[in-house]
Picture (cartoon, rainbow, N blue to C red):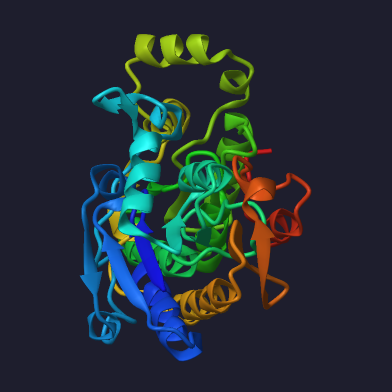
Length: 357
């Protein structure tokens, strides 16, 4: 039995732990000889036919290791049918190389875009199993993605450390958290660190509500304000604009990102000093949390069971604490965002956190 593995899209913690669980499970469950082929640098490696045979020992000590031992890359789904070489499309090259390697199954560890490509490959007859990874936790069909727990820890630690300097200088700190379309990481890290304001892409914010809440906090004697802001936040006014009008507005105002826009608004309306701090890619880095190691290992083991049963075209997911399988065609192209009536938002407001609404 020949199994290919690739990690696609942005890196995150526990990619290696998922492969660890998968390979361990395959060797334990399979009654036939197992051959593992690591495909280098995500879909790019599959397009170019860049792979290497691997041994069980290659996966033995990677459970706690961050990043991905296979490397990763981004291949946007909208360009997957572009010509690559000799009249062949990128997806055509993927199919050809899969068949040329004689694979019985390809396991893809990826996020939303990666799942759309995975589903396309499945529709073309390839045997595909996927595992849900992303720090954004926005993959439809699973309660939790691996990488999410670790990223919460990183963002929380960052804001915890920033609090002391905010209090020392009585500053307002805007902390930009990753999350362009979904605010799961921001809302969870914000609650964990006791942020005063949490702004997420799902709720266009009213700057007056934010300003009034901060002033209330200062009037109550609080020193130092933390505003946890997802990178994809919009004002009420911006949310009404077309994409073209929004881009033109930002260019005219010489604003490159949403955190900068929020800083400008607060500086114009607040007496306190306002600073912006961007957490950046450390949210993706470092060793995975214990929770992520366990989750990823469990997902990997269950994927191995499915492969041994010759059941393909599924994503492994955790639902209500149990590992289940979801049809790729049912989840690909769908994004899990926060419902504005979600209980976590109400709970945040009960903690006297302003959501800008």
